[in-house]
Length: 50
Image (cartoon, rainbow, N blue to C red; front, side, top):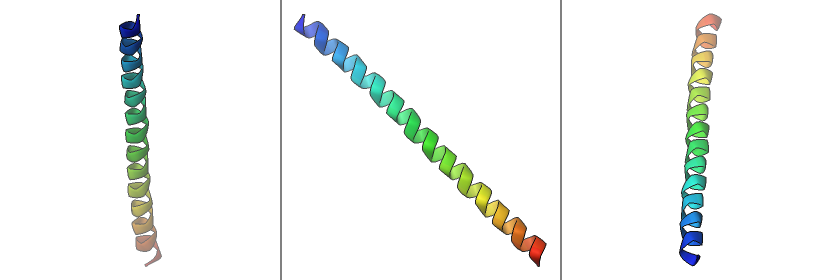
């Protein structure tokens, strides 16, 4: 019974870590996309102004 609980906890931990990694990678890719978008917007604005 104790072993079963340990196995369940182990799987739960792996599941939570996977979710965390997905969230973190999602945030990083979102931030990266936002930064690129802002940079292009800034360059475009500078070209239009000149």
